Length: 295
Ligand SMILES: [Zn+2]
Image (cartoon, rainbow, N blue to C red; front, side, top):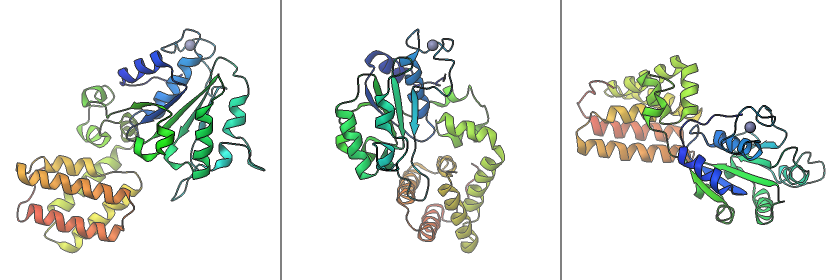
């Protein structure tokens, strides 16, 4: 049984519409998987929505009618076709799992990282979405609607999760550094609460970079290190954003637009060395002789 922080509209919508196939999009950690699980428990709860937490079904975790499919890890994660439909030597797959009768009411499969479905897997999913077995529900989780095949997206009920307001997250932690790091994503805040030293270290690196722009070599080294951490999922962007808030409006706008470009290039796996050099150059042109007072 799962609690979902915030996202009340999305919950109400799911409970009312009960779509057989849903696409849940939003930033990592915002609660996409948690909402998909909540939906699965609601569909199977003896009391209906919201899931009661006390019935026979709600008390089960793992739940026999809930299957979660994730990409196989790697630099290019992928969900291969044999996870979706039977293939020789392929093992457990979605289609066969869905065809068996549910123990309670609904069999729910969460495809976590639907943007990583291989082409063959996506086509197999498409067939499933066209004619799902009557008791079958599919929840696709992806960063955005654009990240998956348009033909897949058009066959799903779309739920878009936005970052939660800081007011909501403050119920989980009061530390402004941790809240800044979370960027409205409870999953990131949970992580930050467990690793406060790493978050503060990240912030110190950003401060060090901005204060040490005069020393080109050290700045480059810092920028490289920050990008390396971003690759590991420790994104320093919110701390830059906070520092830029101190700039005069015109420069702030330039800084934020440059930060947007950096994030985009980083997502597209642009070369770290090139990005670091470009970022230091950009920051120097923005700050000139000015030293940021504080973060
Ligand atoms: Zn229940």
